[in-house]
Image (tube, rainbow, N blue to C red):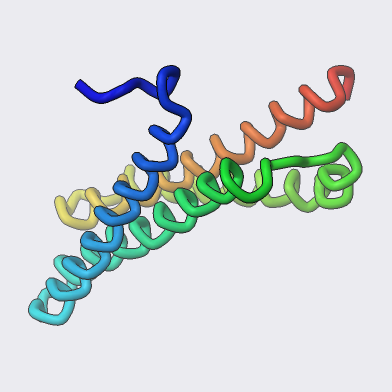
Length: 144
């Protein structure tokens, strides 16, 4: 077994680079599947996966950059400058979750239910990310 992260500070960057290689392969593979298929369900599922892989690659690169180029930083002033917009967006995300949940309740078709469930899960993920920003805000301003 290889060294753990605690033993080797290069482990995380190496893992992230290897992971990026897999994401690149996923992007290429899903693109080929999209080109081969005429089925709209297969195409949309592969497009979702491809875009997620593209985003994963970007996040992995941001992590690498934060480790090797410049660490993440966020000042209270930077957060305050956009906080009202973030709160507005959080309200929009909650509305989309409510709407998608209502759509799911009114849908009996399997493929459509699966895609609606995907959308709900993704909207909940967005809500969770915004909640993490709020937690970060509270760590900067414990009484905010």
